[in-house]
Length: 355
Ligand SMILES: *Cc1c(COP(=O)(O)O)cnc(C)c1O
Image 1 (cartoon, protein in one colour):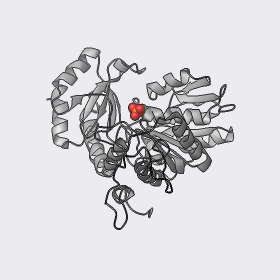
Image 2 (cartoon, protein in one colour):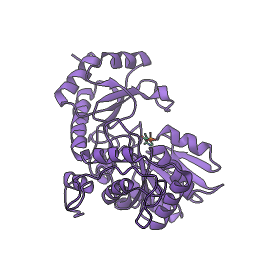
Image 3 (tube, rainbow, N blue to C red):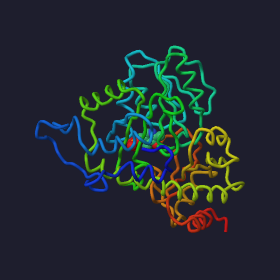
Image 4 (cartoon, rainbow, N blue to C red):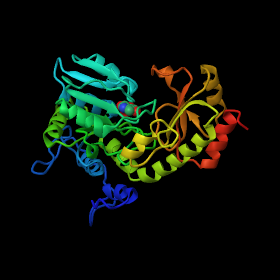
C-alpha cells in the first residue's frame, strides 16, 4: 500500500477486499479443502489467517504469522530461535508470563530493566525488548539496542503489544522480530485473544510457520475474523484513547505519585518515545498509597470498570501487584477507552475525591 497514506486509510484498506469481493474478509471455516488450490488442511493454512497476516504484515513491514494468543506467539518465536543452552535477554519489568516461561526453558536468562543499563550482548542469542513495557511504561531505544545486538551476533525482538502496529514499527528501527498480543488494542473489543509474530527474514517466517503447523497452536477462523474486524478501527480508537489518556494525565499531574504516560512531555520516557513511536495510546500508570486506597478508587468508579487487560473500548483499571507484577502494591494500570473525555475525567476525579 502507498506509504504516504495516513494511518486511518492504511488500516481500513489493509483489511478490505478487491473488486467483486466483499469489503471485509470473511471467516472461512474449513478443516479440509478440495485439493488443487492454496489450502489443503486447516492446521496448515486458512484464507482468513492470510487476510490478517497481510494486513498486519503491511502495517509492520514484514512477514506476519498469526497465533491464538500473545503467549502462543511468544512461545513459538522462542522455540523457533533458541536451542538448549542458548542465552536470552528479557525485560525484568515486562509481561510477567514471558519471564515465567523462559525460566522453565533450558536456556540461560538475563533479566534487564527496560530503562537500562543494558549489559554487553556478547554470547546472547536473542534479545527480547518490551517498549513501552507493561505495566511500568518504560521505554528503550530500539535502534541503538538493535545495533548493539547485531554487533554481538544476537537477534533482536520487540514485544510491540503496548505500542500497536500503528504506534511503532520496530522492523524499520532495525529489529529482526515483532511479537505481540492482539488481545489488547489491535482487536480492541475485549472479546478475543489473539497474537502474531512479524519478521523481516522469510526464512525465519517459514520456521515460525512450520512450528505453528507442527505444534498445532492455531487461531480459529472466527477469532481471526474478529481481530481483522477490530483492526479496521484501530486508528480511530487509538486517537480517542490517547486523547483520553492525555486528559487523565493532566488531571492526575501533581496529585498522585509515579504517574507515567510516555506521551507526556514531562514523562522520563518521552524523549526516546517521541523519537521512535509514531503515536501514543491510552495506557497510563500511577500509584495510590495502599491496597485499600486502590480498592476504594476502583469501587467508586462508575464509567471505568475494574478489569485486567488494556486497549479495549471500555476504560479499565487494575492493581498490578495482585497478579504478581514486581511493582508497588498501589500501582494502578489505567487503560483509557473510547468514552467521552469529559465523562472519564469527571469519573476519575470523583473516585479519587478530587472534587
Ligand atoms: C497481554 C500481553 C501478552 C500476552 O498476550 P495474551 O494474548 O494474553 O496471551 C504478552 N505481552 C504483553 C506485553 C502483553 O501485554
